[in-house]
Image: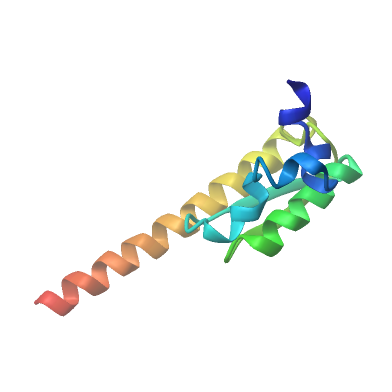
Length: 107
């Protein structure tokens, strides 16, 4: 069972991949704004997966936290929160501007 949830599976082809398509093959279908956060000292495997996500998800953004390890939200909680809040704020501003434009067009 652990194999099915392991990142290793997504980076190494195997005979089961044709019978059980993985989510990685559908990343380009994601339409939701996506922020991928890694860390300077994160595991190489996680950095590789982050790169795949950013390369495949349209418009995805990648941020790496300097001086942090794999558990970046605990290593650098202030920086992690700042990155998340800044991203959400940008999304909210873009949404508000979009709604304003729609309202302006109706007036």
